Image (tube, rainbow, N blue to C red; front, side):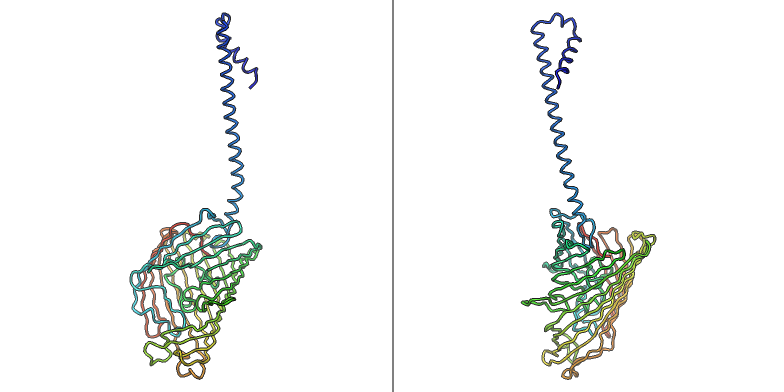
Length: 461
């Protein structure tokens, strides 16, 4: 503060009291000097405080500038559905919990497999009466700018926890290449990667039930490449241990037990239409896979137990088309989808764990379904499934035991309607006419609720 300022203050004080100034004594002058000194100290203290506040504000500004690029980098990390915005971070993972339950009413025993598929997996995924479905706990977060982690735990109604997904994702390879390592749902087909709470019906199509045990998971590596084109083009491959049906879990063995190749293409047609089509190839090996209750010998009550070892190769086609008037999917939309799988298995079959000879069969299945949101929060859907058990080629030693031709194609027709108060809740009614077991038709009714708690990533197209 300049001396000129302080002298001006002193002069103002004198001018305000001119008569007293003329008669001022030495004591008066000393008092004036003390007042001037006090004013000087107060102003200097105030200036110091202002300078400190300025320094703090500048420091906060620099910190905000350094945090902004980090937040932008985190927002660009992949989400469940691919690359996009994410609120996840290494210190604040996204946590979600899916709660679901069903009421099932039907007459036929679900332990009876679809005709011609007794040696396939037979997990219908539902039970009679009131039942709590498998709950799903999910945790995901960006680990750093290069990696992202996802873990999904299945909480069984009867108790116990299993690891459904647990993988690390990385896009550091660049050029549209993404690497996934760990346990994940295979990328084959269209429905396989979707979690159960995202299904449009209570259960999976018949072809998924008998060929993939509802859903095939893998422990291994997945590599995807997204082409830098306006049209969606995705190519990928997987190597895994083959733990999921139809493979046999390789324990105490090196190498891979299963391989998958898949490709998807898609595009938008204006703002109202979009589509995606895909091709999948899966190969694995079954070793000493035992199936019980197989009706090979018709006169044997309860069937027999067979053991199969051989190669399993499956090819699949998938297609989905979506339409939303004016591109507004919140009001109305129509989705049409279908998949077809064809599997060839060849190897050695041991009939009733006693007689071994060659065995080969080609089986297939498909479904076609449509879901229509006719008004906000309300949807309805229709699905038709059909299977072809094929005609088996049986070695001479088992020609009189194993049924080669069932001459029956299992099928099912399903209708559903669901109400979605929000994106976090769903209530569903489903009716089905099940004709998958020869001579055992069944009318089925299901009621279902699905509730989502916490942050949950977007699902695939």
